[in-house]
Image (cartoon, rainbow, N blue to C red):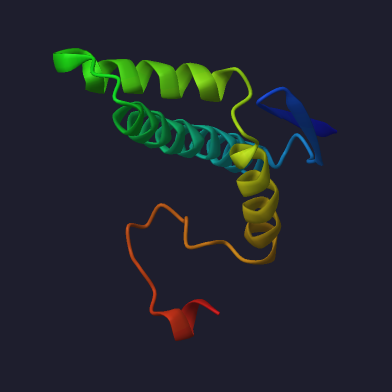
Length: 112
């Protein structure tokens, strides 16, 4: 069975069995986190671009920046979410990244 994840128009397929629903949930959570990170990054980028260009939205500057950053990311962004997902999904298959929902952090030497 294959699991599909879509990030900014690109579809990623993982060979995941139905019994391994936890892996699918982790991949979906990772994809959403990558999209959210790109949205925040683009919000900051948009805010800085508008400030440097002299565009002043007054009190609405923060709201406008958030809306534009999110819209930019949802329209495909700059590919940051795809790159992050590819890299992080590789490393998460090699080790668990500490996401065992225990709320505990392991020292670096124990986690390797």
